[in-house]
Image (cartoon, rainbow, N blue to C red; front, side):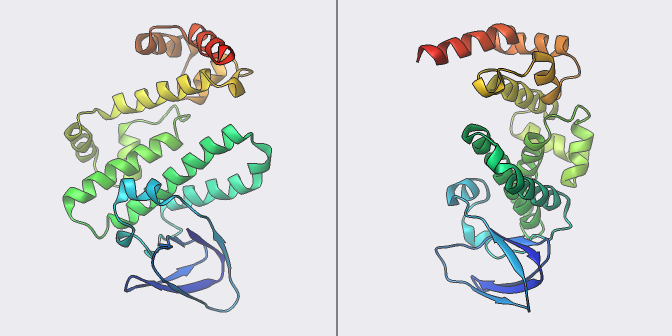
Length: 241
């Protein structure tokens, strides 16, 4: 990934040319030659991303290599801000937390690419990309208690009815998916020794629950244990290992 910080550059790869300005980014396929021409002074942040993490979602690199993702696009703005914050805070994170945050960053990059590719692909493929963008946004905003299907539809640029159809085609309801991801994130944090100091109420709010009682009820319905008991069992098993 090449993120232009200042200045601009021109690049060519796979018979595709692009001009990237400050805030824009593009993916370069390291298996294929490419050329880059800087227009005067410029600064570029380069980040190596595992090929499989992107291709497993978006398909072969030839579909997106050297496509300019404009920095003013909503998800691209979010991805850029997240990556810059990661650079500033990375040294203060434990390896486990850093790994999780890197995963979030890659999801945001994938969502940004999906948003860009969607302008060039047929409707069936476009539907898959919309769902991926929606899921990536949910993962990055689980803490937002106002996150709901209408807001999600607005973010990914489709009508609520269309987004509901796309999720239902894949056997899911949007609201169910959001709550499932919130519960999964909570379960992961409860089992993580790095979150042991976090009180259950704070953990619930950070995963988007409005109250600890609501969190406890939904969590026990899903996992069969209260959050407190789930944490105790998970950490006891970790110590035993």
